[in-house]
Length: 249
Image (cartoon, rainbow, N blue to C red):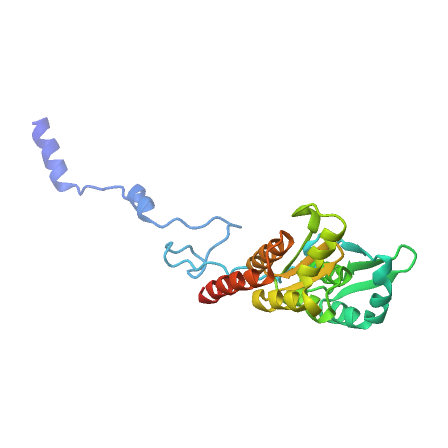
């Protein structure tokens, strides 16, 4: 009887279910007070949608800044026999160095040296060395018009050697060797210069050659052959062969 009554009570009374816990689980969480709320535009998107920040644009360093903000110096000694020609052609040397290469230049009368110094507006880091080579080439005996090519071209060099480096000669043998190098009225020297596109200075027993690396080698071989006693005609024919090969390249 008791069990039947209990069944009847369960059938008649409605069942009450507590859904508060389930509702709390499904309800969205609200942000706490003081918490930052991101808008839709500020919320992080996928990696593909992210845009890289613009790259920084730095101004290029000047030659003065590349040297650590320090001024660079060069000094070129002037021998006694080149002092007067330097004074005569000073403006021809000063103008391209100061105005075009932006290098300060002065002549120290006490030490008899040409002093060079970089400036804040010097455009090229290698301008000082070019100007030093230009002044040094003029001091060796090259004309200003020939030596100034060192400022404009990068592949020009000056090579120097002495006659005794090739062969030990003394007295009249040395004088005849120098005569063979220059030729009558400088004919041999000019022929070597024109065929090899170089410039040659014969100062007593010292020989200076201005030109590119390959041309200096050809001119040096011709001069060494003359020093060793080869006749000029044989050197000319050899020069024609070598220069024709160079022209083909």
